Amino acid sequence: MKKGISTHPGKGFFPPYPAEADYYKTKTYEEVFKTVKEQFGKNIYKWTFSADELNLQADDPEYLTEMLKLLVPKCPDLFESDNPSARKLVAHFGRLVNTLLYPVNPEERGKTKDTFDIILSGTKDAKWRKKYIQPLLSLNDMVTYIHQITEYLRKQYIEEYGDEPLNKEDIKDPKELERLEKTDQRLVTLVKSGDIQMLIAKPTTFTQKLVADFFKRTLGGLQQSFKKKKKH
Image (tube, rainbow, N blue to C red; front, side, top):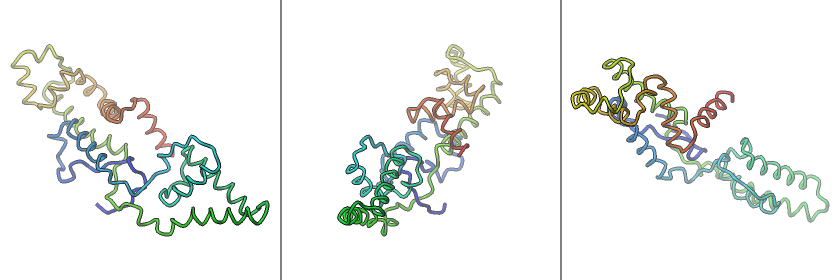
């Protein structure tokens, strides 16, 4: 993989098993999510900051000015973001520009110029603040990554059982349980949880549900995110 620059901490993940092309034949959903969670915990994005992460509540001009001083050098996407808080900071930046161009008096202009010098001073060395890392996989990429497990399990099941889902009662029979385990051990968990029906009938939705649960989001909210990204 070529190296890239991330300015969106927490917005992506590394492929959990880059050296295992056939990971989906053996790895469980739980194993993949556990590995991804460990990546998030390593805080490898500490030198970057994304405008998407902003959540400013205050409208006080002095507070907004201080936030600009802090964030402009560390947040390369600040002025391009549609985040409401970022938009608030951009609007305040515009007011400062207007004050600089049309000051009430020379003292006001001097004070505003000093503020601009502070805000822009850190941008000269902004490049080193970006953490050079492997390109991250997006939320949609994660669904695709997880979905390979779903597709493989679905294929294994249908080849052995057709499209009729088993249930917990079926695998109380030791012989039936043994048959299912030989087909793929991971299918036992799906039958016991009752998810096997969705795996067969709506595999894409099933994968999206797993990812949504991992991020503690609703399935509808996750699907809406995909629609927005396609629109952009």
